[in-house]
Image 1: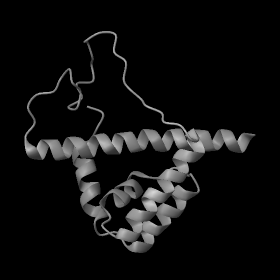
Image 2 (image 1 turned 60 degrees about the vertical axis):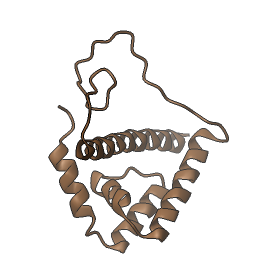
Image 3 (image 1 turned 90 degrees about the vertical axis):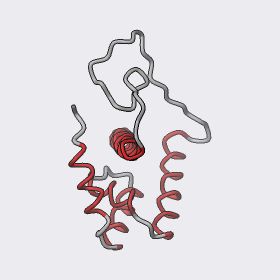
Image 4 (image 1 turned 45 degrees about the vertical axis):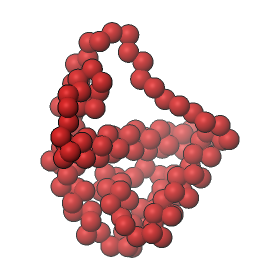
Length: 132
């Protein structure tokens, strides 16, 4: 499997001890539309500081506006068969009844995976903008 569950859970647990300065630095980096590390994303996901949370939403809105403008963009996977080699726990083809704890882990993994893809997309757009 391409997702290391222990790595992600340990990263999320250790990120709860991160200082406000580290979170502010990650937010500054995100505001400049630079890619974030796994540790930085985990710190942003686990912060409970209302000021940081407010700033996360503000920056996310600015990045969304910069990339997509004033429009709604929806993404949906397109499958042409019911065969898949990934066996992702969140996939409707493979989903079984998930216990409460497994559901929490699944949502965390999915969110981190989506954030990682979004950060890559943002970085690519930013690099293309710099080239112009």
